[in-house]
Image (tube, rainbow, N blue to C red; front, side, top):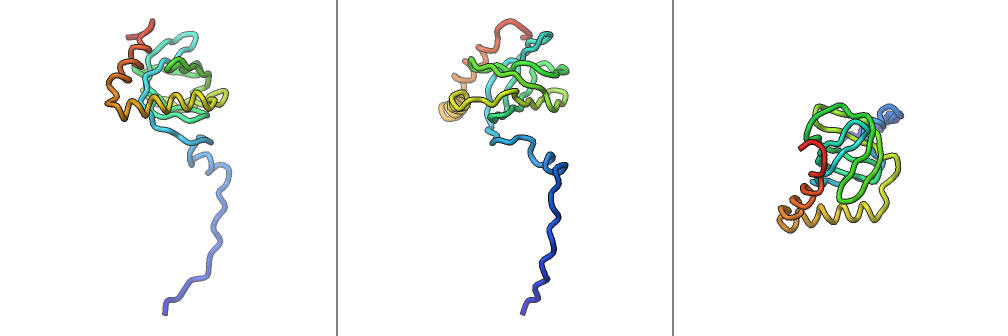
Length: 135
């Protein structure tokens, strides 16, 4: 016969610990989409690695310190502030939530890239980002 220990109280997660368990309040979607980050001093190429309705993680093609600005991809633009940054990666929290149509179009594009051999879609997105700026 197995002895079962009495249940112990589980410590309550406090608000400070909640912040460490996933910063986003909406589902992250892994993508691989070329983009641009723009602010008054910067117009640089970026690569979105994941996106949600409230933020995105992206890699900078030319590392630099960012604070806030506009992320632009596939004809969509959204303003936000950088909430974390390493040398070449950033986490951005959007000022407004992405609308459902923008999210759907972004995820559909990423899905087509993955399903259909991606190269054609990657080249389209990559060409879109090669406007004026650093390349």
